[in-house]
Image (cartoon, rainbow, N blue to C red; front, side, top):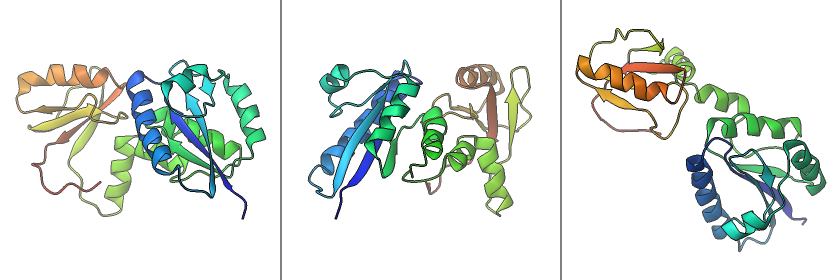
Length: 205
């Protein structure tokens, strides 16, 4: 039986946090799967400057020694690898949307959800509207742009519309705390979602 050729797509063009988070999880996965004999694992690593590399491992030394490629050069190189499946390990919004879409264009199947679905889930308001239409209870909320005034009764949760990993999230219990909460959220997104705060229950992810 021929080996299944995998391409682990790792890193982030957005910032060091997402780049290092991606590398950490992917490195763990590659280490745990190293003994599996029916996979041929390859790595594509995207750095914050947008360059691609194809290191032999995710140790920093190997990443540093790998030749940098532009996007066009990387895509040309990927076509020579004859990849069967792309394994996404990017967690930033561009990683779960734009970079997955690249492999759709290359007609290389990806593990997990499509880039179109990930683009919806990356937008909290769109995702919320869809699950609400399906009959799932959701908190009362509104989307704000800079200069808008919140109308949701306190306490509320203020968060960027399209950020992850709890960046820019604030719990507001007093009216005088709104300005700082909005300022923090707008540092991560041009739009902010404000929702009624629901006391912690059972969390399902």
